[in-house]
Amino acid sequence: QVQLVESGGGLVQAGGSLKLSCAASSGTFSDYPVGWFRQAPGKEREFVATTRWLGGSAYNRYYTDSVRGRFTISRDNAKNTVSLQMNSLRPEDTAIYYCAKSASRLIVSSLSKPGNYDYWGQGTQVTVSS
Image (cartoon, rainbow, N blue to C red):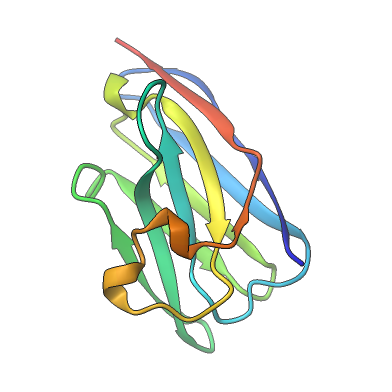
């Protein structure tokens, strides 16, 4: 069983930056995908970014188009942490952000689907004012 705890959300003006962190308070990340999703009021949970471990300290990163170039996901398997550096924030980035981990290896086309992730954090609110 893996328990995920997010931190780092808050209120920021458009154009500003925030860094979210997620730590496994129990269990490990192992070699399975770990990433971030978000959910805005009245909308479905959507994929933001994820990592796919390749072995050792190597991993691939995947982003949804709307955040590519602005957000950077990083993962440290030794510390069981994953972070999301968010720059050039926009009001449309406002949402609750969730850290999530899969319990199995996923093919690339499955990485963005919330249903393929088995463990979720409680979420952290990010609000971007215009």
